[in-house]
Image (cartoon, rainbow, N blue to C red):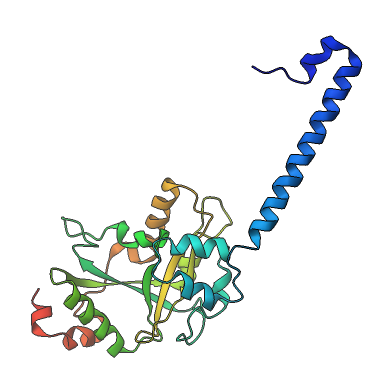
Length: 244
């Protein structure tokens, strides 16, 4: 081990004071240098003037959630439109829908898995704003999904209150665990996303978060396709999609 400033006292008390003073100066110099590097680096990082720019930059990224949290922590973009196609931010009173498909969201026993919300940690978990989504939009979405995924079957829809989702906490009491962002698309203006916050710290917390989302969305009890929206969406599907 290297000698500390105190261990050099064998050279005399004066030497000790010099060594301690030198050590303090080195620490101050290191701190100043570290601050300077951080300050300079900040000028080369992207600076977001609005949430629309952040949405466009991160759209489709595998680490979209992490980028949003780094640029706009604590759900800062909930209070404004993230998409130019959106009618406005998602309100607490709105109902949120998560469409469920087998086998991706369903276990071998036929039960819906909490992992149906797994993308809340990375890409963002897609949901629909039920109060503003036209029936035709829902029908187009389901038909398009099933056409693109020929081995999948539509199993129903999970519904939650936006207010209940926003009450879910992170790793500590009193901090938010989930943000609800509007991320409308040109062909899907009612599209929104669930994104975990930076207050969800490790894998155990992520598992707990998915369980809490599962509970908020009716504990995995979906509305059947034939009953969802009075059966309109089901009826709009072709016979080949219905018979899967």
